[in-house]
Image (tube, rainbow over all chains, first blue to last red; front, side, top):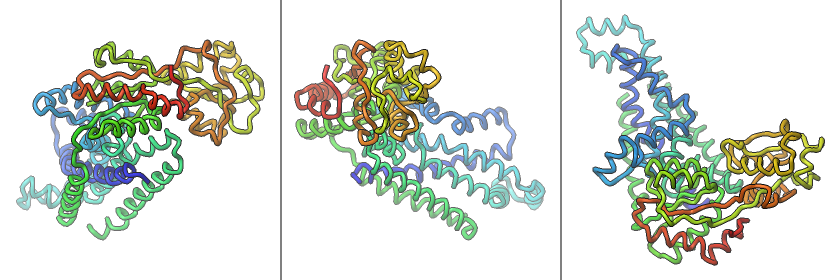
Length: 221
Length: 255
């Protein structure tokens, strides 16, 4: 296995961990808002955030380029101010994985939070808990199984992200090529033995992760 | 819950720290976006370039020519673009993303008919016979190799007879894979693709030059590059004698 293949393993794990971190920090509050609050445009927001799950990842990647590329409507300002573009950096891989995997957190999380018994929440309020206390000590803990499932799914999806990453981060060996991209390149250049090795590795990593998630989610919580 | 948060934070920081060590930026980089069919040849050309221009590291970004063109339009920091199709280069050149005067055709490819190893098909004409049940080709709407294949079928006037046997693939390597796995009786690919899986496929026929538009790959310097001279010298290396020898080794021809 050459150095760019080894690097891709490290990069894939990095990208999956960091994007899952942001999915937890941003996705769970979003899921909470969607499940528990009413505001204008709520369902529109839900649809927008869910779209990457339905769209082909390449299309999501194209949207991301239109937004964050050097000529994009957000990327343009970044480039003017900082002379920097997210495209073709590993941050782009994180961003692509984040956007593609976020719907799994939001959909699962929203369903779990909506399923929490409203009587218990109201009881918390009547006992003098504030909004924050109720959320942190009653609502979220009661939905933890569903939230954890959302995190697990998001991480798994981020680990395997291909299409959007290919578009926004590029397929640069040793820099932005994650395991799925390396597998694509190896298969395309007819390097089947190395491709098979990477495929088996990625499958094992995903399998072990899912096993650990199933095995320990009950004991940790 | 607290424990989980602590674990997540710790692993995140360890990971970031590790990454910082590994990802220290090298001093000078040249980014080359190239069609995936050029991968093996370009990786070797990159090594040649790094030997001749010590201190500059060549980064390759391989993908479908259409995707690579979209990235350049979106402002990807690319210095050199090598496309497998004139159309994608034309697209971005028309929009002003290519340095005028830098564009040049650097390799030619040949369209071939391939079959599984054991097949007895010897010509494009034989595709019309009853023994051939399924033929794979790229989708002419999206795959350049598919457009060439359609032109070759027209040239031999077999488009009608084989219409119901065609299986369209979304890229040319998929055609190759169908043939190599024996899922179809024949397929139309580039000679360079056939070379990749010569153990499982055989070349039944080569399409004559008159039968389709020439398959020539253009290369050009991308406008806005921060290292124009390095980009130009990369193209020089590709077109040098040694560069041509490498490209020929992988089945390309020099125009």
